[in-house]
Length: 603
Image (tube, rainbow, N blue to C red; front, side, top):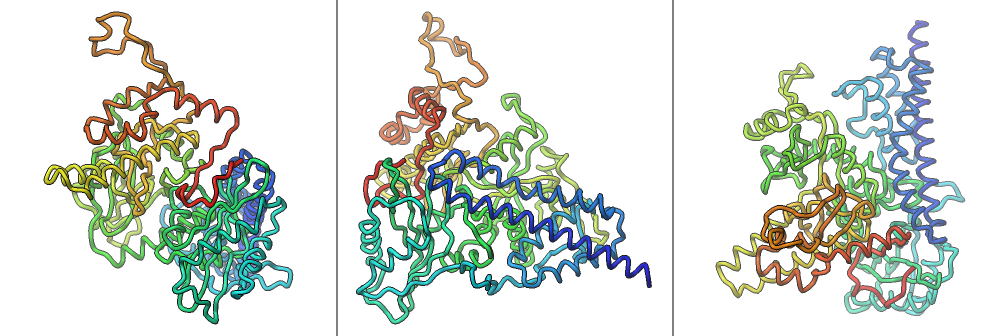
C-alpha cells in the first residue's frame, strides 16, 4: 500500500504545481491587461503596442517554467501513466470554485503534452472535453467587481444614468464635455427602439471592464427594452488637448462583429471570470464562435482549444472531404479547405520558385510578426497547429497527391493509435477564416459586366472592392506594414464587405523599406529595354511599378486612379515612413468615419 500512497502524494504535488503555474500565468496576464488603463490615460501608445506584443508571449513562457519545475522536482517525464491519470483527477479537484477553470484545463494540456512528448494522447491524460462547467461563475467576494453592471434609466433621468455608466469606469482623465457626448449617444440610441417607448424592464447592461486597443477604450454592453436587446459599444478617445471624448456610438450585432473582427488586434481587458465575459459577448453576437471571443480577449491558447473542439464536433457531423482550395495556387503556401467548414488550412511548401527567396523559418517569423502586430482590421488572424491528425478517408486523393508533391516533409499517413483507422498527420499548419479571394470577387463582377455592360450591381461590386482594396493598403501602411506582394489574389472579402490581407510571406515593416521613384532613362536604349537599367537594393520599393501588375483592366484602373492614385507615388509611402519613424501612431477606426459624432482633432 505504501507505493500507492506515495504515488498519490506525488500525483497531488504535480497537480498542485501545475495549478500554481497556471495561477501565476493568469495573475501576470491580468496585471498587464489592467495596466492598459494607465497607458491609455497617459497616452502611452508605444507602450500599449509593446505590452500587446509581450503579453502574447506570456503563456508559452509560463508553460516552459512549469515544465522545468515538474521535471526538476518530480522527474515528471519518468512517472508512470497511472500517476498521470491520478494527476488529472487531483487537478479536477483543484478546479472546483476556480474562476478560470477552462483556461486552467488548457494550461494542464499544454504542460502535459510537453512532458509526455507524444503527438496523440488518450483522454485519460488530458482534457479533451471540459471537466468543469463555466456556467454562472462569479466572484462573490463583497469587494469584487461584478462581470457587468446594470442601470435602470427612466424617461426623466436617462442622461444622468448614461453619465453614471461612463463615470463608473473611473477614468483619471477629464472629458472635454461628457454631457454633450452622452446626449449624442442617447440621440443615436433612440433610432434603435420601436416607437421610443420604455418598457418595464428597460435597462443598460455594461461589462465592468473597459476594452483597450490601439488608441481607444470601449464601453461594451447592451440595451434591453421589452423583448428587444440591442448591443452597443462606445469608443472613448483622446483629443489633442488631452481630454477624452466619446467618438461614436455603435449599435447592433454587425457593428460589434466588425469591432471584434478576427482581423483586428486583441483587446486588453481586466477580467476575473473570462468565461462570464465570453457568455455576455455571445449574447451580443450569437453568430460568432466562442473561440473567436477568447482570441479577441487575448486568450489565444483557449481560442485554439475551443476551435479544435468545434472542429472535432463539426467533423463528427459532416461527411464532405477536404480538397485543394479554389483560386490561384500560391507559390509558398499549399491551401486546402473543407467546403462545409468556414476556415482554410495552410501548409508551408518544401520548395519555392527562384523568385521567392525565403525559408520555412522566415515564413513562420512573418506569421508571428502578424500575430504580435496591430492588425487594424486588415490582416487575418491565424491559428497555428502542430501534429494535427485528420481521418484519411476525409481527404480527396488529389489533395493527398498535392501535399506529397509540394510538402512531403509535413505529411505523415499512418495508424499511430493502432486502432485500424488511417490518419493524415500534418506536422505544421495555419488555419484562417475563409474569405472570398478578391480576384474571384472581381472576376464575378467582370463576368456580369460582359453579359450586360450596364449592370449597376456588378459595377457597384467592382467599385466597392477596388476602393476597399486601396483602403486596406492604406490602413496597413498606417500600421507600419508593407504587404510586399499586393496582387488581388492575396486579399479576401469578408462577409461585411471588408478587404483583408492574408498572404504574409513577403511583408515588411514600412520603416525597413526604401521607397524610390524609378530613375529617368539615361538614353533611348534604356527606355526601350525590357531590362531594369538602374540598381535595385534588397529593400528598395518602386510604387509607380505597381500599376502594370494591378491595373490591367481599364474599369479597375479608372476607379483605382480616382480614389487611390497616391499609392503609385513614392512620396506617399515615404511620408508615412517618416511619420512612423518619428513616433506617430496613426488612428485606425473600427467603424466608418461618418459614424463619428464630431470632427475631433485626436491625439
